[in-house]
Image 1 (tube, rainbow, N blue to C red):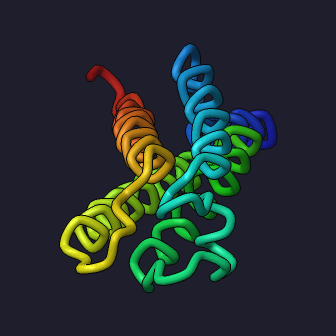
Image 2: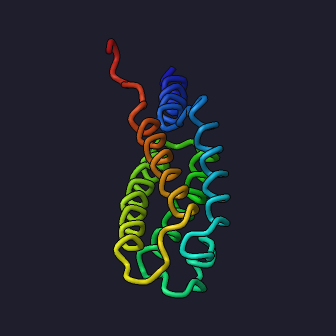
Image 3: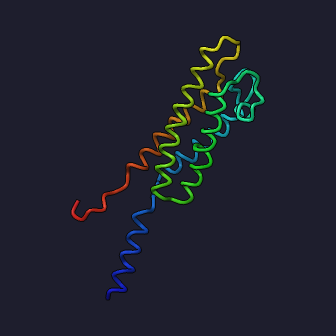
Length: 153
């Protein structure tokens, strides 16, 4: 009887650690796809996001490059890993990482708007920022949606 109880407890712990994203997974997946498209669009002048990431955009600065890296890391790679692993810890990593990336994106847009040169923020940079806002909101919702495990609540 004790072995059966231990097995039931083990299954319960495993299921409690699992994330069930439901329809939110589709929103995250579409947002990741939009973010990949935003990387191809112009961010600074005629330079795309991937060019900013690899330092091929003239006069891009550190903040847009940091945003390009953090948006690809948390918005694409970690989000895909979290959807595949379906773990609560990964959802929290995505939520915090995407929120950090949103702050980077706001700083990147601000740095382009206050720059004295001609290169203003392009549509790709703005689209990437808006997509990261959507991803941050969705991952925060998923991370906070964990049901209570206390009996009777």
